[in-house]
Length: 421
Ligand code: ADP
Image (cartoon, rainbow, N blue to C red; front, top):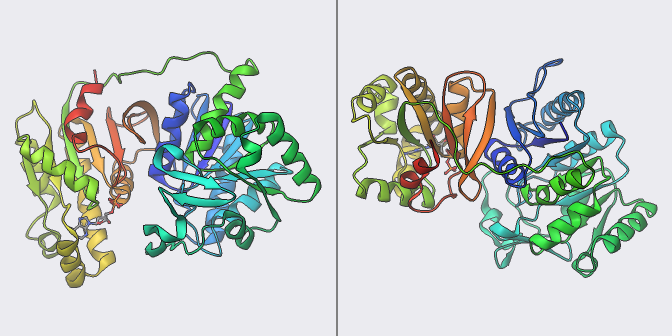
Protein backbone atom coordinates (compact mmCIF):
# COMPACT_ATOMS: atom_id res chain seq x y z
CA UNK A 1 0.00 0.00 0.00
CA UNK A 2 1.18 3.51 -0.76
CA UNK A 3 -1.34 5.94 0.65
CA UNK A 4 -3.40 5.65 3.83
CA UNK A 5 -6.43 7.89 4.34
CA UNK A 6 -8.24 8.53 7.62
CA UNK A 7 -11.68 10.01 6.85
CA UNK A 8 -13.87 11.55 9.54
CA UNK A 9 -17.17 10.29 8.07
CA UNK A 10 -18.64 7.60 5.80
CA UNK A 11 -19.74 9.43 2.67
CA UNK A 12 -16.62 11.64 2.85
CA UNK A 13 -14.57 8.45 2.82
CA UNK A 14 -16.32 7.22 -0.30
CA UNK A 15 -15.80 10.60 -1.92
CA UNK A 16 -11.99 10.56 -1.39
CA UNK A 17 -11.77 6.86 -2.32
CA UNK A 18 -13.48 7.65 -5.61
CA UNK A 19 -11.09 10.55 -6.25
CA UNK A 20 -8.07 8.26 -5.78
CA UNK A 21 -9.59 5.49 -7.85
CA UNK A 22 -10.24 7.85 -10.74
CA UNK A 23 -6.67 9.17 -10.52
CA UNK A 24 -5.38 5.62 -10.99
CA UNK A 25 -4.98 4.12 -7.51
CA UNK A 26 -6.77 0.87 -6.73
CA UNK A 27 -8.62 1.93 -3.61
CA UNK A 28 -10.48 0.08 -0.88
CA UNK A 29 -12.64 1.59 1.86
CA UNK A 30 -12.60 0.03 5.33
CA UNK A 31 -15.39 0.88 7.73
CA UNK A 32 -14.58 1.73 11.34
CA UNK A 33 -11.31 1.84 13.26
CA UNK A 34 -9.45 -1.43 12.60
CA UNK A 35 -8.90 -3.60 15.68
CA UNK A 36 -5.34 -3.82 16.98
CA UNK A 37 -3.32 -6.18 14.82
CA UNK A 38 -6.06 -6.47 12.18
CA UNK A 39 -4.66 -6.65 8.67
CA UNK A 40 -5.95 -4.37 5.91
CA UNK A 41 -6.83 -5.42 2.37
CA UNK A 42 -4.21 -5.18 -0.35
CA UNK A 43 -4.62 -2.03 -2.48
CA UNK A 44 -2.71 1.06 -3.65
CA UNK A 45 -4.71 3.19 -1.21
CA UNK A 46 -6.85 2.29 1.78
CA UNK A 47 -9.42 4.71 3.18
CA UNK A 48 -10.56 4.12 6.75
CA UNK A 49 -14.05 5.57 7.28
CA UNK A 50 -14.50 6.77 10.86
CA UNK A 51 -17.35 8.56 12.55
CA UNK A 52 -15.08 11.07 14.22
CA UNK A 53 -16.37 14.42 13.03
CA UNK A 54 -18.53 15.25 16.01
CA UNK A 55 -17.95 12.56 18.61
CA UNK A 56 -15.99 13.33 21.84
CA UNK A 57 -12.50 14.52 20.93
CA UNK A 58 -10.67 11.80 22.93
CA UNK A 59 -12.61 9.14 21.05
CA UNK A 60 -11.88 10.82 17.69
CA UNK A 61 -8.16 10.90 18.51
CA UNK A 62 -8.09 7.27 19.68
CA UNK A 63 -9.93 6.03 16.57
CA UNK A 64 -7.74 8.12 14.25
CA UNK A 65 -4.53 6.84 15.88
CA UNK A 66 -5.80 3.25 15.64
CA UNK A 67 -6.51 3.78 11.95
CA UNK A 68 -3.06 5.34 11.51
CA UNK A 69 -1.33 2.35 13.15
CA UNK A 70 -3.17 -0.11 10.92
CA UNK A 71 -2.34 1.91 7.80
CA UNK A 72 1.34 2.19 8.74
CA UNK A 73 1.51 -1.51 9.52
CA UNK A 74 0.10 -2.19 6.04
CA UNK A 75 2.89 -0.13 4.49
CA UNK A 76 1.38 3.34 3.98
CA UNK A 77 4.09 5.87 3.05
CA UNK A 78 1.91 8.93 3.41
CA UNK A 79 -1.19 9.62 5.54
CA UNK A 80 -4.02 11.92 4.49
CA UNK A 81 -6.39 13.05 7.24
CA UNK A 82 -9.58 13.75 5.26
CA UNK A 83 -12.29 16.06 6.56
CA UNK A 84 -15.17 17.93 4.97
CA UNK A 85 -14.56 20.58 2.33
CA UNK A 86 -16.49 22.99 4.56
CA UNK A 87 -14.07 22.31 7.47
CA UNK A 88 -16.96 20.98 9.61
CA UNK A 89 -15.76 21.35 13.20
CA UNK A 90 -16.22 23.33 16.41
CA UNK A 91 -13.72 25.49 18.31
CA UNK A 92 -12.63 22.36 20.16
CA UNK A 93 -12.20 20.29 17.03
CA UNK A 94 -12.12 17.61 16.10
CA UNK A 95 -9.90 18.57 13.16
CA UNK A 96 -7.13 20.36 15.12
CA UNK A 97 -6.69 17.83 17.95
CA UNK A 98 -6.78 14.84 15.57
CA UNK A 99 -4.21 16.53 13.29
CA UNK A 100 -2.01 17.27 16.34
CA UNK A 101 -2.14 13.63 17.44
CA UNK A 102 -1.32 12.34 13.95
CA UNK A 103 1.49 14.89 13.56
CA UNK A 104 3.06 13.68 16.79
CA UNK A 105 2.65 9.99 15.95
CA UNK A 106 4.13 10.43 12.48
CA UNK A 107 6.89 12.82 13.55
CA UNK A 108 5.70 15.21 10.81
CA UNK A 109 7.42 18.59 10.80
CA UNK A 110 4.70 20.26 8.77
CA UNK A 111 1.26 19.49 7.36
CA UNK A 112 -0.91 21.43 4.95
CA UNK A 113 -4.54 22.34 5.67
CA UNK A 114 -6.43 22.28 2.36
CA UNK A 115 -10.18 21.54 2.34
CA UNK A 116 -10.53 23.03 -1.19
CA UNK A 117 -12.70 21.10 -3.67
CA UNK A 118 -13.13 23.49 -6.61
CA UNK A 119 -15.27 21.04 -8.63
CA UNK A 120 -17.87 21.30 -5.86
CA UNK A 121 -17.44 25.06 -5.42
CA UNK A 122 -15.16 24.97 -2.36
CA UNK A 123 -12.17 27.24 -2.95
CA UNK A 124 -9.58 28.91 -0.73
CA UNK A 125 -8.38 32.45 -1.46
CA UNK A 126 -5.85 34.19 0.80
CA UNK A 127 -6.68 31.63 3.46
CA UNK A 128 -10.45 32.23 3.35
CA UNK A 129 -12.73 29.33 2.47
CA UNK A 130 -15.53 30.00 -0.02
CA UNK A 131 -18.64 27.91 -0.72
CA UNK A 132 -19.68 28.85 -4.22
CA UNK A 133 -19.54 32.62 -4.34
CA UNK A 134 -19.88 33.31 -0.61
CA UNK A 135 -17.45 32.96 2.29
CA UNK A 136 -18.03 29.88 4.46
CA UNK A 137 -19.63 31.86 7.32
CA UNK A 138 -22.26 33.28 4.93
CA UNK A 139 -23.12 29.87 3.46
CA UNK A 140 -25.79 27.54 4.83
CA UNK A 141 -23.02 26.03 7.00
CA UNK A 142 -23.48 28.97 9.37
CA UNK A 143 -26.65 27.24 10.63
CA UNK A 144 -25.45 23.64 10.69
CA UNK A 145 -27.02 21.93 13.72
CA UNK A 146 -23.77 20.31 14.92
CA UNK A 147 -20.92 22.33 13.44
CA UNK A 148 -22.10 25.88 12.68
CA UNK A 149 -19.29 27.64 10.82
CA UNK A 150 -19.16 31.31 11.84
CA UNK A 151 -15.72 32.23 10.53
CA UNK A 152 -14.16 31.71 7.08
CA UNK A 153 -10.49 32.22 7.90
CA UNK A 154 -8.89 28.78 7.87
CA UNK A 155 -5.79 30.22 9.55
CA UNK A 156 -7.93 31.38 12.49
CA UNK A 157 -10.14 28.27 12.55
CA UNK A 158 -7.19 25.86 12.59
CA UNK A 159 -5.23 28.13 14.94
CA UNK A 160 -8.05 27.96 17.50
CA UNK A 161 -8.15 24.15 17.44
CA UNK A 162 -4.55 23.05 16.98
CA UNK A 163 -1.43 23.27 19.15
CA UNK A 164 0.95 24.65 16.53
CA UNK A 165 1.13 28.00 14.70
CA UNK A 166 -0.58 28.20 11.29
CA UNK A 167 0.91 29.82 8.18
CA UNK A 168 -0.40 30.50 4.69
CA UNK A 169 0.74 29.75 1.15
CA UNK A 170 -1.40 32.14 -0.80
CA UNK A 171 -2.74 32.02 -4.32
CA UNK A 172 0.02 34.35 -5.56
CA UNK A 173 2.60 31.69 -4.67
CA UNK A 174 0.56 28.66 -5.78
CA UNK A 175 0.15 30.09 -9.28
CA UNK A 176 3.95 30.36 -9.61
CA UNK A 177 4.20 26.57 -9.44
CA UNK A 178 5.70 23.69 -7.49
CA UNK A 179 9.13 25.19 -6.74
CA UNK A 180 7.67 28.42 -5.39
CA UNK A 181 5.29 26.49 -3.11
CA UNK A 182 8.08 24.21 -1.86
CA UNK A 183 10.29 27.21 -1.09
CA UNK A 184 7.51 29.00 0.79
CA UNK A 185 6.68 25.87 2.79
CA UNK A 186 10.34 25.58 3.82
CA UNK A 187 10.43 29.23 4.91
CA UNK A 188 7.27 28.77 6.94
CA UNK A 189 8.73 25.66 8.57
CA UNK A 190 11.80 27.69 9.59
CA UNK A 191 9.38 30.15 11.12
CA UNK A 192 7.73 27.38 13.21
CA UNK A 193 4.51 27.24 11.13
CA UNK A 194 3.82 23.55 11.37
CA UNK A 195 0.38 23.89 9.81
CA UNK A 196 0.02 25.70 6.52
CA UNK A 197 -3.25 26.68 4.88
CA UNK A 198 -2.82 26.46 1.11
CA UNK A 199 -4.93 28.42 -1.37
CA UNK A 200 -6.54 26.53 -4.24
CA UNK A 201 -9.04 27.95 -6.72
CA UNK A 202 -8.98 25.22 -9.34
CA UNK A 203 -7.74 21.71 -10.06
CA UNK A 204 -4.44 22.98 -11.48
CA UNK A 205 -3.67 24.46 -8.08
CA UNK A 206 -4.46 21.14 -6.41
CA UNK A 207 -2.05 19.40 -8.77
CA UNK A 208 0.70 21.94 -7.96
CA UNK A 209 0.11 21.48 -4.23
CA UNK A 210 0.04 17.69 -4.60
CA UNK A 211 3.46 17.74 -6.26
CA UNK A 212 4.90 20.17 -3.70
CA UNK A 213 4.00 17.95 -0.74
CA UNK A 214 5.22 14.64 -2.18
CA UNK A 215 7.61 14.31 0.78
CA UNK A 216 5.15 15.27 3.51
CA UNK A 217 4.30 12.28 5.65
CA UNK A 218 1.02 13.87 6.81
CA UNK A 219 -1.50 15.90 4.81
CA UNK A 220 -4.84 17.26 5.96
CA UNK A 221 -7.70 18.39 3.77
CA UNK A 222 -10.73 17.53 1.66
CA UNK A 223 -10.94 14.98 -1.11
CA UNK A 224 -9.65 17.56 -3.64
CA UNK A 225 -6.10 17.43 -2.30
CA UNK A 226 -6.00 13.69 -3.07
CA UNK A 227 -6.15 14.52 -6.78
CA UNK A 228 -2.44 15.31 -7.14
CA UNK A 229 -1.07 12.45 -5.00
CA UNK A 230 -1.18 9.44 -7.36
CA UNK A 231 1.11 11.25 -9.83
CA UNK A 232 3.80 11.46 -7.13
CA UNK A 233 3.75 7.70 -6.70
CA UNK A 234 3.81 7.14 -10.46
CA UNK A 235 6.79 9.48 -10.84
CA UNK A 236 8.61 7.60 -8.09
CA UNK A 237 8.03 4.35 -10.01
CA UNK A 238 5.84 2.94 -7.24
CA UNK A 239 2.49 2.96 -9.04
CA UNK A 240 1.84 1.37 -12.45
CA UNK A 241 -0.49 3.07 -14.93
CA UNK A 242 -3.93 1.72 -14.12
CA UNK A 243 -7.05 2.17 -16.17
CA UNK A 244 -10.17 3.33 -14.38
CA UNK A 245 -12.93 0.76 -14.78
CA UNK A 246 -16.05 2.16 -16.42
CA UNK A 247 -18.28 -0.70 -15.22
CA UNK A 248 -18.53 -2.88 -12.14
CA UNK A 249 -19.14 -6.60 -12.44
CA UNK A 250 -22.05 -7.36 -10.13
CA UNK A 251 -23.53 -10.69 -9.12
CA UNK A 252 -26.85 -11.56 -10.71
CA UNK A 253 -29.64 -10.52 -8.41
CA UNK A 254 -32.31 -7.97 -7.80
CA UNK A 255 -31.88 -4.18 -7.73
CA UNK A 256 -33.39 -2.05 -4.96
CA UNK A 257 -33.37 1.52 -3.64
CA UNK A 258 -33.66 2.67 -0.02
CA UNK A 259 -33.93 6.38 0.70
CA UNK A 260 -33.95 8.02 4.13
CA UNK A 261 -32.57 11.29 2.80
CA UNK A 262 -34.89 14.32 2.91
CA UNK A 263 -32.46 16.59 1.04
CA UNK A 264 -33.63 18.58 -1.95
CA UNK A 265 -31.56 16.60 -4.46
CA UNK A 266 -32.87 13.25 -3.20
CA UNK A 267 -36.50 14.41 -3.30
CA UNK A 268 -36.02 15.45 -6.92
CA UNK A 269 -34.51 12.03 -7.70
CA UNK A 270 -37.51 10.34 -6.07
CA UNK A 271 -39.91 12.44 -8.15
CA UNK A 272 -38.18 11.30 -11.34
CA UNK A 273 -38.20 7.66 -10.22
CA UNK A 274 -41.95 7.85 -9.48
CA UNK A 275 -42.64 9.48 -12.84
CA UNK A 276 -40.67 6.69 -14.52
CA UNK A 277 -42.99 4.13 -12.92
CA UNK A 278 -40.59 2.54 -10.44
CA UNK A 279 -42.73 0.68 -7.85
CA UNK A 280 -42.47 2.69 -4.65
CA UNK A 281 -43.57 2.44 -1.04
CA UNK A 282 -43.52 5.43 1.27
CA UNK A 283 -42.58 4.78 4.87
CA UNK A 284 -44.44 6.59 7.63
CA UNK A 285 -42.18 7.23 10.66
CA UNK A 286 -45.24 7.57 12.93
CA UNK A 287 -46.53 4.16 11.83
CA UNK A 288 -43.07 2.68 12.43
CA UNK A 289 -43.06 4.23 15.91
CA UNK A 290 -46.47 2.80 16.77
CA UNK A 291 -45.69 -0.60 15.25
CA UNK A 292 -48.45 -0.44 12.61
CA UNK A 293 -45.74 -0.56 9.93
CA UNK A 294 -42.70 -2.82 10.34
CA UNK A 295 -39.42 -3.48 8.53
CA UNK A 296 -40.64 -7.02 7.82
CA UNK A 297 -43.72 -5.66 6.01
CA UNK A 298 -41.59 -3.22 4.01
CA UNK A 299 -39.32 -6.10 2.94
CA UNK A 300 -42.27 -8.34 2.05
CA UNK A 301 -43.73 -5.59 -0.13
CA UNK A 302 -40.38 -4.93 -1.85
CA UNK A 303 -39.64 -8.59 -2.55
CA UNK A 304 -43.12 -9.06 -4.05
CA UNK A 305 -42.44 -6.45 -6.77
CA UNK A 306 -41.41 -7.38 -10.33
CA UNK A 307 -37.83 -8.66 -10.24
CA UNK A 308 -36.63 -7.06 -13.47
CA UNK A 309 -36.65 -3.47 -12.25
CA UNK A 310 -35.70 -1.70 -9.04
CA UNK A 311 -38.19 -0.94 -6.28
CA UNK A 312 -38.00 2.11 -4.05
CA UNK A 313 -38.68 2.21 -0.30
CA UNK A 314 -38.45 5.77 0.98
CA UNK A 315 -39.16 7.89 4.03
CA UNK A 316 -37.98 11.06 2.32
CA UNK A 317 -40.36 13.95 2.83
CA UNK A 318 -40.45 17.71 2.54
CA UNK A 319 -39.28 19.92 5.44
CA UNK A 320 -42.79 20.68 6.77
CA UNK A 321 -43.71 16.97 7.03
CA UNK A 322 -40.35 16.12 8.60
CA UNK A 323 -40.81 18.92 11.14
CA UNK A 324 -44.29 17.62 12.02
CA UNK A 325 -42.93 14.10 12.60
CA UNK A 326 -40.04 15.47 14.65
CA UNK A 327 -42.47 17.47 16.76
CA UNK A 328 -44.35 14.29 17.65
CA UNK A 329 -41.40 11.90 18.05
CA UNK A 330 -38.47 14.20 18.80
CA UNK A 331 -35.79 14.88 16.20
CA UNK A 332 -33.35 12.18 17.31
CA UNK A 333 -35.97 9.51 17.95
CA UNK A 334 -37.57 10.11 14.55
CA UNK A 335 -34.19 9.70 12.85
CA UNK A 336 -33.27 6.62 14.87
CA UNK A 337 -36.61 4.87 14.24
CA UNK A 338 -36.30 5.31 10.47
CA UNK A 339 -32.62 4.33 10.45
CA UNK A 340 -33.25 1.16 12.49
CA UNK A 341 -36.11 0.17 10.20
CA UNK A 342 -33.92 0.68 7.10
CA UNK A 343 -31.03 -1.32 8.62
CA UNK A 344 -33.42 -4.21 9.29
CA UNK A 345 -35.03 -3.78 5.85
CA UNK A 346 -31.59 -3.97 4.18
CA UNK A 347 -30.80 -7.23 6.02
CA UNK A 348 -34.09 -8.75 4.86
CA UNK A 349 -33.69 -7.55 1.28
CA UNK A 350 -30.21 -9.01 0.92
CA UNK A 351 -31.39 -12.27 2.48
CA UNK A 352 -34.25 -12.18 -0.06
CA UNK A 353 -31.94 -11.93 -3.09
CA UNK A 354 -31.28 -8.21 -3.56
CA UNK A 355 -27.66 -7.87 -4.70
CA UNK A 356 -27.62 -4.32 -6.11
CA UNK A 357 -28.56 -1.64 -3.64
CA UNK A 358 -28.73 2.15 -3.85
CA UNK A 359 -28.94 3.95 -0.51
CA UNK A 360 -29.69 7.67 -0.26
CA UNK A 361 -28.66 9.65 2.83
CA UNK A 362 -25.42 9.90 4.81
CA UNK A 363 -26.81 8.72 8.15
CA UNK A 364 -29.08 6.26 6.39
CA UNK A 365 -26.05 4.80 4.56
CA UNK A 366 -24.22 4.45 7.88
CA UNK A 367 -27.18 2.58 9.37
CA UNK A 368 -27.54 0.26 6.36
CA UNK A 369 -23.81 -0.51 6.19
CA UNK A 370 -23.86 -1.28 9.90
CA UNK A 371 -27.03 -3.35 9.59
CA UNK A 372 -25.40 -5.47 6.89
CA UNK A 373 -22.14 -5.74 8.91
CA UNK A 374 -20.19 -4.46 5.90
CA UNK A 375 -16.52 -3.93 6.79
CA UNK A 376 -14.81 -3.38 3.45
CA UNK A 377 -15.85 -1.80 0.15
CA UNK A 378 -13.96 -1.85 -3.13
CA UNK A 379 -14.48 1.37 -5.10
CA UNK A 380 -15.94 1.08 -8.59
CA UNK A 381 -17.12 3.49 -11.30
CA UNK A 382 -18.60 6.92 -10.59
CA UNK A 383 -22.34 7.36 -11.09
CA UNK A 384 -22.34 11.10 -10.41
CA UNK A 385 -19.65 13.33 -8.81
CA UNK A 386 -18.77 11.91 -5.39
CA UNK A 387 -20.92 8.75 -5.67
CA UNK A 388 -19.38 5.49 -6.92
CA UNK A 389 -20.71 1.97 -7.09
CA UNK A 390 -18.81 -0.14 -4.56
CA UNK A 391 -18.50 -3.86 -4.03
CA UNK A 392 -18.65 -5.54 -0.64
CA UNK A 393 -15.35 -7.37 -0.27
CA UNK A 394 -16.16 -9.79 2.53
CA UNK A 395 -19.74 -10.59 3.35
CA UNK A 396 -22.84 -10.81 1.19
CA UNK A 397 -22.49 -10.81 -2.63
CA UNK A 398 -23.53 -7.23 -2.99
CA UNK A 399 -22.79 -3.98 -4.78
CA UNK A 400 -23.92 -0.77 -3.09
CA UNK A 401 -23.93 2.92 -3.89
CA UNK A 402 -24.07 5.22 -0.87
CA UNK A 403 -25.38 8.64 -1.88
CA UNK A 404 -24.94 11.64 0.36
CA UNK A 405 -28.18 13.66 0.41
CA UNK A 406 -27.35 16.54 -1.87
CA UNK A 407 -25.31 14.57 -4.40
CA UNK A 408 -26.45 13.25 -7.75
CA UNK A 409 -28.40 14.42 -10.79
CA UNK A 410 -32.24 14.14 -10.91
CA UNK A 411 -32.05 10.87 -12.89
CA UNK A 412 -29.64 9.24 -10.41
CA UNK A 413 -31.99 6.39 -9.41
CA UNK A 414 -32.67 5.60 -13.06
CA UNK A 415 -29.24 5.77 -14.65
CA UNK A 416 -27.06 4.20 -11.92
CA UNK A 417 -27.84 0.63 -13.08
CA UNK A 418 -26.28 1.05 -16.50
CA UNK A 419 -22.79 1.03 -14.92
CA UNK A 420 -23.29 -2.53 -13.67
CA UNK A 421 -22.54 -5.61 -15.72
P1 ADP B 1 -28.98 13.38 4.09
O1 ADP B 1 -27.68 12.81 3.56
O2 ADP B 1 -29.93 13.80 3.02
O3 ADP B 1 -28.76 14.41 5.17
P2 ADP B 1 -29.39 11.41 6.14
O4 ADP B 1 -29.70 9.98 5.96
O5 ADP B 1 -27.98 11.75 6.56
O6 ADP B 1 -29.75 12.15 4.78
O7 ADP B 1 -30.33 12.09 7.21
C1 ADP B 1 -31.70 12.02 7.16
C2 ADP B 1 -32.19 11.78 8.57
O8 ADP B 1 -33.59 12.01 8.59
C3 ADP B 1 -31.99 10.34 9.01
O9 ADP B 1 -31.68 10.29 10.38
C4 ADP B 1 -33.37 9.72 8.75
O10 ADP B 1 -33.62 8.60 9.55
C5 ADP B 1 -34.28 10.87 9.09
N1 ADP B 1 -35.57 10.80 8.40
C6 ADP B 1 -35.81 10.23 7.20
N2 ADP B 1 -37.10 10.38 6.84
C7 ADP B 1 -37.69 11.07 7.82
C8 ADP B 1 -39.02 11.57 8.02
N3 ADP B 1 -39.99 11.36 7.12
N4 ADP B 1 -39.27 12.24 9.15
C9 ADP B 1 -38.29 12.47 10.06
N5 ADP B 1 -37.03 12.05 9.94
C10 ADP B 1 -36.71 11.36 8.83
